[in-house]
Length: 493
Image 1 (cartoon, rainbow, N blue to C red):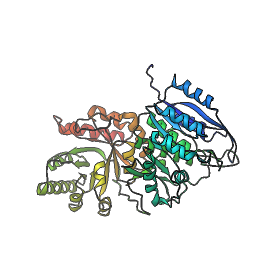
Image 2 (image 1 turned 90 degrees about the vertical axis):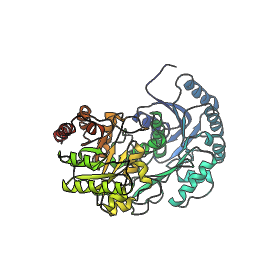
Image 3 (image 1 turned 45 degrees about the vertical axis):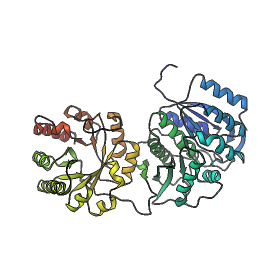
Image 4 (image 1 turned 120 degrees about the horizontal axis):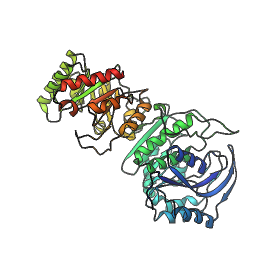
């Protein structure tokens, strides 16, 4: 097969004559994410915005012909499953998936949002037997999850156990969407697990009746983003933001609830979910003090001596990241760095060592993603320290977003030699997207492989700050490099 740049996703689902859900919603979503969509139509429904009037299941021979036509020419990178309207459909689709090597998202559409039955009773057991073992992700809402488990799910606190039980039935992972449960913290909460890891995605509570096609759009957005090469956790975050954007911008078109709007890649922080390993408690959202403006040039150095040297050049934000000290020597280094920062009225952040940052009265602390698992975030906030968080992916930005830090560091923009990183460089286009999405609510800094020559292009994205390590500390004349970089920051202010 000839190589191609544009990913291909199939939707195997029913047609919604009203255009708000099913195949129609899937294709609109695929288009928004730059994915070519192909269709295997399992049923034709006669429906509008308030009722499903008729369902005609695709004959077995016609279904097979669609699958064979696509398989011979337009093989899928990802397949999204929606309405599977009969036992024959489930059996045939599951047979094809036995040899399909790509990612499979299954949205177990059982009842339309207008209340119409879309799946015959008794087919749930067949789905569990035939399809769940091949579903990389199952995306049931609460009522669908209850149907799989044959029991009620009593509130948000019971969702985690229900998700684990569905994985035990055979699904490789599950995202239970809890949109119609009572909101907590004025948010709506979904839970994902693969049986080992798990997290909650919490998005804004959008007060609208125009929710037609929500589940279809969510699952097809996940499929499309995976087809674009993103990891599943990133795809879940992006898809949640996409649907929140669609709900916020939805309008009523007929006499009943309107469809979710399809408005392209999510672009606003208002739609961006927060991510937590545990269900957020009521009223438990942290928010850290601001840094009082852009960070400007942000050197990252390994000693108090470097801090003194660079603050004397006029630098106002700096980070102490030392890895080779411990005990009294480490405490003394941090104490000295904090004192120098106060002398120059500068923002000195301590990397990792949040307990010492608190005890020594530092301006702030910077944490990597791995440190978020062990640090006492509430204690840092209560001590009045600013918080900066490293991020490299959508998943990590969503996790940082749940903490409302003082700033978010985005990287690596370019390949870096300062440490081994599993992430590919984000590049300027992705950095520009982050700035567009986050800068309304957050102070940002860019890091990773940035030198004096690249700094101008990085700052042109509007990020406001560049963090640097080796470009300064390994320079022949660090003071001259700092002067040049500070001038670039000031010119972009």
